[in-house]
Every structure is written in C-alpha cells, then in structure tokens.
Image 1 (cartoon, rainbow, N blue to C red):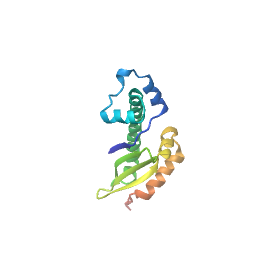
Image 2: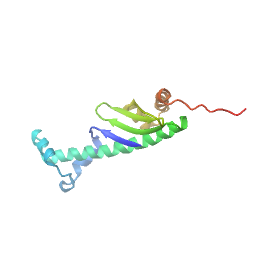
Image 3: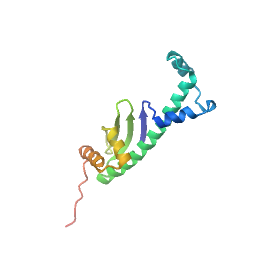
Image 4: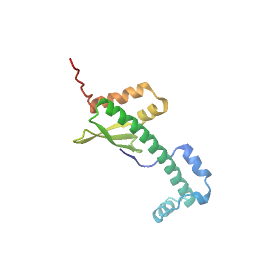
Length: 149
C-alpha cells in the first residue's frame, strides 16, 4: 500500500519546534527556494524554518495515514478478501483522503473527509467508525459466505 501527502501544512506544535532549532540544523535551501524567499521578502532562515515545520507535519501525517490505511486494509479484507487497499492519499488543500481499492481486476477510487478520519483516530469515535463503514458499504460488497446444510 502506498501512502502520500499532497500539499503542505504545518501544525502549531511543529512550527514551534522549528523555531527552536539551531541555525545549523535548518534545511539547506536550494536556488529555487532562495528565490521564493527573496520574492516573498522573507529571510532565508525564516523560510527554512517554515520548510522544516512542514516536513515535520508531513512526517506525522504520513505516519497517521499509514496506520489508518493498515486498519482500513484489515477491515476491507474482513469484509471481502478479494479487495485490497492500494493507495491512501491526503490532499491537504481540499481536506480529503482519496483511497484506491482493487478487486484484483480493476482499481477504483473513493474519497472521505479528512476531519472524519481525524475524529476517528483521535477519539476512537464509534460514530466516526460507523460512518467509515457506511462508506465501505458502497464500495466494498460483503462477501457472501455459503453455509453447509
């Protein structure tokens, strides 16, 4: 399963961490980044701290997406072993998580709201979990188990 974060953002926590980092621990800016800082009338060290904060947040988001993807993959397999999660991608600008499923023959996508997943991951909300399962009902049919007579 591939996990991606498209776009950038930084949390307050990561921004504060980036402000405390010493100058020599900041990421080195390439020429494009230096030009962007100059165009924005921003000091290079301030720009580098912004990049660091975004990287820290992106790492945290990737870890959370991976954990969610692993959990969702397990639930999809329980529902129907012929289906699997191929990709989980967060678009930070739209606040949507795109999930790519495969039934072994073709792939298809669906989206869920990032806030729904965040509520589930931070609170363990049964209401959020139920909402996720309702979305799965649309995209992943339950495998019918035949019973022996």
